[in-house]
Length: 288
Image (cartoon, rainbow, N blue to C red; front, side, top):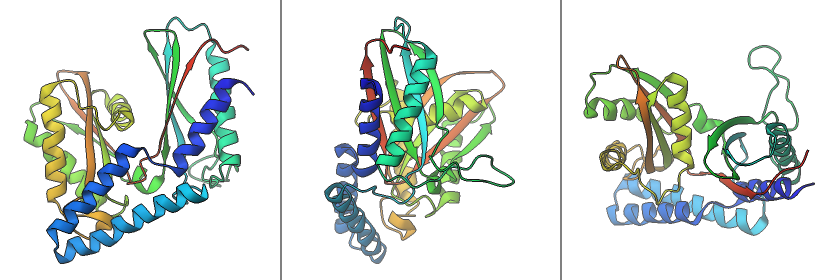
């Protein structure tokens, strides 16, 4: 087993058992808001948030996954143009790391061979969904979403009219969140992709979920749009567990890029409160 496989495997298992401190802080802030609100709905939401925090404590102490749905391996690989590793070796190393994490980390076997007919379980949580991206530099950076399907089933794409206003974009996102309701186990994490093509917008929405929650969009207009959408989502009062209250979403992040003059693709990817993300950076060359 090479260092790449061991390092990625370790991060995958850890991400199933421990949330980033930044996400835990957002959950604690949500708890404080519900305590201050002190309404009937907030009291119900508060029970959910306290149970989430208890769950996270137990998961870390006992070293078992925080959720029974350990999800699919949704892998995003940024390969430095100057790195001499072959894509074949990178891919085989990622697959090996995912396989080992699944078996050694007590992941639930949640993947079927094909989607419509027999739906026979692969029994190893493979294949992983792997997307490659060329970037400057010589490192290999891997980000993995452990994508549970309570939230994945609530993701959506909307091909908006190119003349739609900022308010139209906000309303489209709110409609998707309202349709999801309590199904994705709120408080949710929201990634939004704007621009490109239909499939590219979906990709951007997942990339938005990967971004550090403490880093806003670099463009001031989109940074403000993130804040506006978060505020509007929380005004829906779907609340934690769908029971009401003042916190429906923990954060909203947007990634955007150029698109065609005749369209405005919008994709919304939703994570539940179990915002499980593994990050691993490899410096060096993977040998065949």
